[in-house]
Image: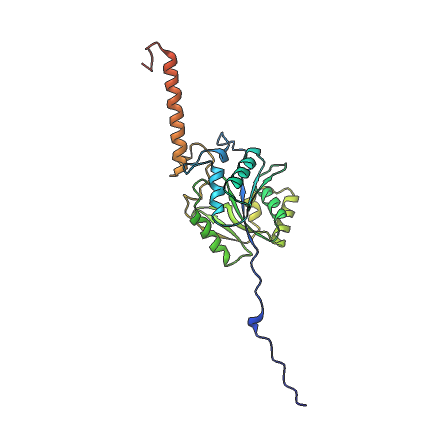
Length: 250
């Protein structure tokens, strides 16, 4: 019987693995020392607090959301928002001590959610836009196994980025944390990553109450108005209390 050579299977039958699922992760565990008040609970001009506004923004991406915070009021506010606005995909995670910055927080999120792509986001970008988030996600879709970090045209803003929680990256991060590394930028120096240019106004960290003097920002203007209003009210109360008709209030 004549034998015919085996016909190779078409290459098209080889299935390309699906990319790891996406998850939005909001960091809200800082001490807000430079601001002088809890940044997450500051009022936002769009309504609610910075924390609520950012959670609502992330919810528009239709992704599961993890809030990591050591502050009980943040967790309670997130849980109330999830119930009021029917956000079953939102989980509020109490960050255990020690509280040593975003690199340790990222490590904890990767250990909790392995083999996912984590969209890391800070609570102190109050002007963050849906366009910026979608631009970042679109750029990362082409190389889902690589880190993609926001860039404002002058420097990286690595608190906003896509961090694949793959085994190699988790292992590298765990080793860095184990040897005492706590600086996110230092760890990233050894990690291949791609910068994604975004509108600098929408990804600006607001860490100080005088941030409006460092660049235009709707939220910074709101803080300035609140400070002016507070100062005017205080001066008015002082004048009413003086009652003598003399001095600078007269």
